[in-house]
Length: 296
Ligand code: F1P
Image (cartoon, rainbow, N blue to C red; front, side, top):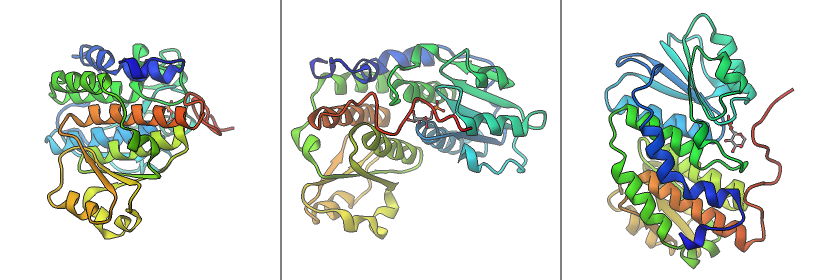
């Protein structure tokens, strides 16, 4: 873990993800999670929206019920959902609080929250709080993946392999080519599409990098035109046949790791921090960004 000790809160927080995932999974069984077959909308903003996407895709693909993910400001709450789940580290994000207010008394709400003292924790019909996963850095790492770890475990995933993979990733370094690359495109399929979007956001927030994210099968439908030498296309999750060859013909680097996709996201966190350091940026405090967005 030598590379990722350092002055930043982000360094400490991203390195604690394996333990955080174990602690989150060990919270189960817990009250409040939707019954099998329930029709669920999962909402959040920024990073939390991307975790909502990953959980929604996983829950529905595993046969637990229709599950949609929305950015909180755009959720179609007139639909007949049995539950709305809001993911929010701070529990103060305006759009999530407004949405819970809007459906109160009509649709049961569950908050998956970092700060137990927050308005969302008291406004939700039920709340699962993960104070051990809360963070000092503005940039989210372990709360996001900790919340997803809990939700994955609630669907029956055994996280032992993910935790071992994340430990291995943390013991490795960051390749200089990834620190120096000009541009990154992250790809995913199914539940890893949310992880790809989060990888791209993390890199933008903490290191002001040019990043994009797409469902992998849509990459050939246009975005591949960005690929060229010095740029990186990074597939998160199961590989797509033929994709590495298509990318390598452009001269771009293709990255794919046969490890748990959440461990790959830890690797991206490390790259983001290394790129911030190389550019003299404070990864904990991205420009123009606050811990949560509270609108007047
Ligand atoms: C959501 C969020 C973060 C983002 C930044 C601002 O926060 O948009 O994803 O990185 O910190 O807030 P929250 O609702 O999960 O607290």
